[in-house]
Amino acid sequence: MRRIRYGIALSAACVALALAGCGGSTLTSTSEAAGAPAPARADAARDEAATAEVQAKQPQAQKQGGQDGIVSNVKVTQQERQVIYTGSMTVRVKKVAAAVEQAKQIVTAAGGYLSKEESRSASDSRDSATLEFKIPPNGYGGVLGRLGKDLGTQISMNQATQDVTLKIADVNSRLKSAEQALESLRSLLKRADTIGHVLEVEREISAREADLESLQAQQKELAAQVSMATLTLRLLGPVAVAEEPEEEEPAGFLGGLKSGWSGLVSFTKVVLTVLGAVLPWTIVALPLVALLVYLVRRDRARRPGIPAPPSGPRPGDPDPEAA
Image (cartoon, rainbow, N blue to C red):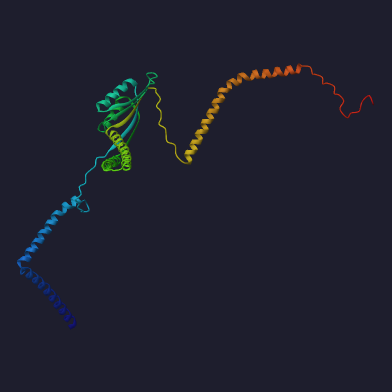
């Protein structure tokens, strides 16, 4: 019993000593902070202010740097995409001539123009026309909608886009490099002092000028394709036949099998066509040929047989007189 009491008393004493040590350390720290010199307190105050400023700027830095909180001084500029729009549409109309004029008016109102026109006139119901328009990209969608609804019944429509931003950038870069190289060669030509050197530089200049002209042509063509969308409009009369687009043949074994089967079918059609063309003539000519053969055979049968000449004595046979 006494041991238990001594244990409890010893534990209480340990706890009291621990609490006293913690309180002393706290008081010591507080007294040390209170007794610190003024410069140290000023430095601590500046550190706290700098920390507060950094914490205040941290959300803005995270907003600028993204979710990862990385701040970059590089300015990102959004490059405008360069896209080529092409499309084809087939519309069945009541009168092809009137629809052609209406289509031209719709495209002209949108700022476009007609670049190509082909028409086939058979009758009012079998007429057809193919028109190729150049339309500004900002009005391309509206023109498609109007042509499909206002002219008649839309049969088919195909649209395609091609992003040529990188291609245009590459052509522009190559064009700039070619111009700089050409200027350098022209400057070198002015300093050439021998005929051989002059001729060599002139040949190089001619080659670079040809490359420069080719790049300039590519640049103009790409700019024209981007600035104007191309739409091919086909107008059909009420009973005109709409040609289905050709499907690409598959490659490999299936493509060869399909090509072989198509060739066999075509050959069979040709053979049957030839037989059909020859059969009527055969039917008419066969009785005549049979009659001619019959008359020739009958004529041969009526002719008398020609007696064969007597055969003379053969060498080595015995003489009949001597017998």
